[in-house]
Image (tube, rainbow, N blue to C red):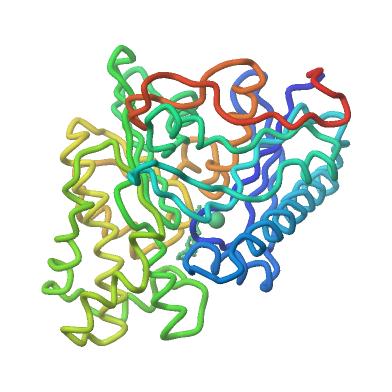
Length: 374
Ligand SMILES: Nc1ncnc2c1ncn2[C@@H]1O[C@H](COP(=O)(O)OP(=O)(O)O)[C@@H](O)[C@H]1O
Ligand SMILES: [Mg+2]
């Protein structure tokens, strides 16, 4: 069996499914990648499930779980045909699923990712590992972020203190000390692109603010910024993780309704909010950092990258492309790697990151055509 794995990732942004084919024999290698669209009717279902209390929620959930599972399977199948790789060569698929709720601080704590892995295993014939987060939550953890163990495996350096910054819908950092004896830590810093996306959709009918161009036409409103920064999440100590449940348009409107601000100025302020909260997290929790490696879609937002550099003038800030993996595929690679960890019987969480009681083998295994042989 070759050591090929597929990773399927669809984050808070719901901008599409990232799918990668990776080889972990030696150094992790990205062999092929594909960005798979989510049909708009399915997108609407996922957004509804993530926010509303619909009267038919259980039915909507059950149906959408299956439909999204089909979509994930076709993402994997499309990638394999693009790459000319037969399913029999793939050891497993690691599928994150779509988070429809994340409530790790609820009592009882819970989180839910959907995209039926039985359907993925059935349609691809490939063993599918999914539902990675709930074991960590069951062990008292946040269930997030889960990418730090992969960041550690790929990006830790013996002489340089590094931070990996993933700017997806939410933003999260992984702190990788040069000293390998020191624990790797990390947490969600708060919103990444999600508020900027929602705001540009509302006012400009576009999915996102390409390169921060619209934000660049506005000016950051300092009064509004200070109010946004007063949210308790930003000062809360790690471990912590967050999602659309907290940072959404309702949250933003709660600050703006008292103080009308021009839409482009709000966009500039939201860009600044992400840059400022990320920079503050790094300065407070990883003051020794030499290099910041940026991944996720936010790495393409040149205004955001400029603002990050302005806040962190002493740091080398580059996208992960400079370190061997294009920024769009790091997260999907992480879930391919997490599937491999599971099959090898190795843990996928870092307790210092999630707050879980200990290391855990994550996920549930849904056997493919080869049964449990791998
Ligand atoms: N060229 C770009 N300019 C500005 N923002 C971008 C650009 N490309 C991608 N993005 C942002 O990245 C987001 C997607 O990031 P991604 O890492 O896929 O997040 P998630 O993991 O939440 O799906 C988009 O919604 C958009 O906000
Ligand atoms: Mg995405």
